[in-house]
Length: 250
Image (tube, rainbow, N blue to C red):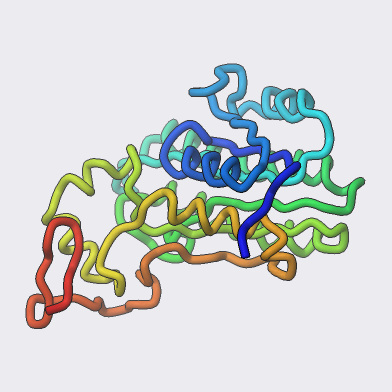
């Protein structure tokens, strides 16, 4: 059994780097024709500009089979020191642009009674990781969009799902992955004992976008190494060693 997206047309927002680039590669490897909506790849396509986003959708001929709302950003600030401009930017990219992407996808897909939409949420959709109030709020909001869109669009044959990555090795997390002490402490709470790779998230997205997930909608698939399943931590020096970038049981 393999994921076959041959003949399907896909859109990926934020597809130029990190998880987005891995999603683009995965969908293409499965046979889809993939269009990247990202300022880095196509400067006129700013996902926070509703008109530019609508114009980009309008340039594509039907069918639009798969839409991945992946573009995201974040910045660290204490709650009391979060600048309004940073809050506004994060909400614009991570939440409003996701909503507008889903709107545009729905308008294209409803007449055909078919389509798959996948949103990139986060483990931060569920928890309150310090210094990330705007990011956490935006990703929690993505799940609100997920549930509402799945309920509304299901009768039209359109499936809407999300992936919730944990700590994934991307340009945005490079500093953390280059600091062994940060990894050692963070990964204590990962049953798999390590961080994730973009391809591991992309594989989950490809599955949700494919007919292999034909009876799956409204789902938020955790791709987090078990992080949210481990309330009190899994790893300690009594039974394991931290080697390189992961915990290894003795």
